[in-house]
Length: 183
Image (cartoon, rainbow, N blue to C red):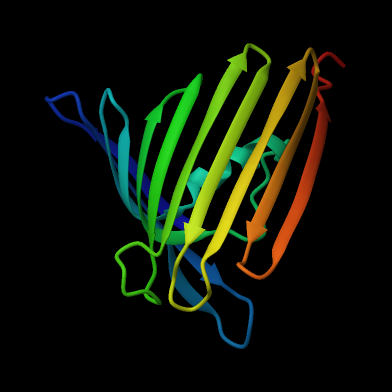
């Protein structure tokens, strides 16, 4: 991947961020270059509005609880989307509309999520999305979980339920990490 990221600040207390990233795909019969990120973010005291090709940040609210190594996922969900995100470290709320060429609607998937620091060492997150594109029946996904940090130990769990209309799939992810900073 090769990309550019930058920020400009205006006199009206707004920030303007941009990100463009190209990726070289070497899987398959031919190599390909594709745009993996291309978005603009307008930020202010109330929150941020990001428009363009981007990761599914709302789904990451719960994924971050169990990704104890902060490793990139093998499957990156990147779409053309509009994301409104408000809050900070204590409470973050996100609403995203994901655009897809397979739908006649402007947004074929809507996502809502929040993450909160309940107390100093306890984090909680929920994300919910409804996919109403023309290719598949309505798909509803809800993820929820929490993480607790006590000293050098961190434990977390996330429950993920996907409803395909006729089929329901559930999975649970548990994670634990121990920091060896003192050794």
